[in-house]
Image (cartoon, rainbow, N blue to C red; front, top):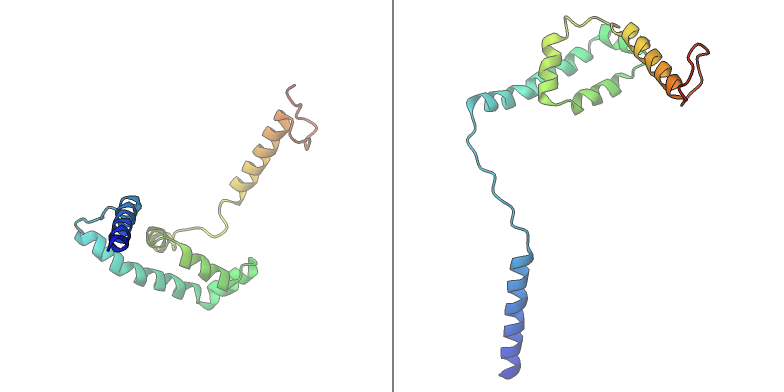
Length: 131
């Protein structure tokens, strides 16, 4: 009887300790508005439309000319957020192909000039590092 009481007391203590040590996760409840529900319903359709556009032969040929594997492009579309997919679908016809190449070259040039001026690299002879 005494051993049973001791075991019961030990188990009660361990159970109380377990309950106090368990992290209590708060419940996240809230109202869902109609806009969020509609956005969730249309997100899959927009993603499917973008993948279908990538499956077009002219787009696949253009991706192949640029050295992009169409499977990699579809995997990237799968990783986009719903907002990014909606934005890309809305702007896809207005986006110029290959635009931004000059800006990219200028940014890389400026980075090299700055790293030369700091003294990290020595690429350009006309840039003297600050000492």
